[in-house]
Image (cartoon, rainbow, N blue to C red; front, side):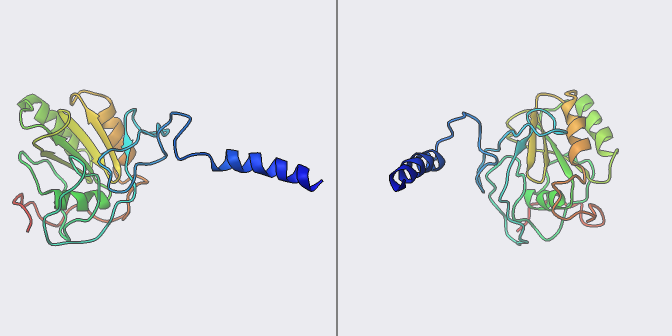
Length: 193
């Protein structure tokens, strides 16, 4: 009887332990902390293509920060947040990340974005009190929408997933500090540090 029990347990352990490789071919549940690459979890209510990042630090620092993503999706940030509004220039990453912690959606656009498309983005910024829009050089796509731990790369301002992203994540469930304001701070666009 003991021999039978050992024979049953050994194959079970071999199957349970397995290897670290993902035999299903599916991505892991979340990207490792500090990873520049997120994971598309395909969660209900999220626009298709939304990447999820986890393990983001939330400390206040007074120095410039190098983030692993462009634009950053969260992490350590400046103690002063950026007023949520439309900006026709770049803003400091460290202040925008603080907005994300407060539940903001940060929409960034490439410098070569047309005036007409900038008008669409300005109008979108005016629809909520936790939406910040700014120019950002070096984006992977013309438009990138970001919330704390979430990011969506878009080919244009007319992609319907942009408004879906705002609806899903402005003051959404990913917000580390729900109820925090995104106003009454600074509109200064000069670098921190």
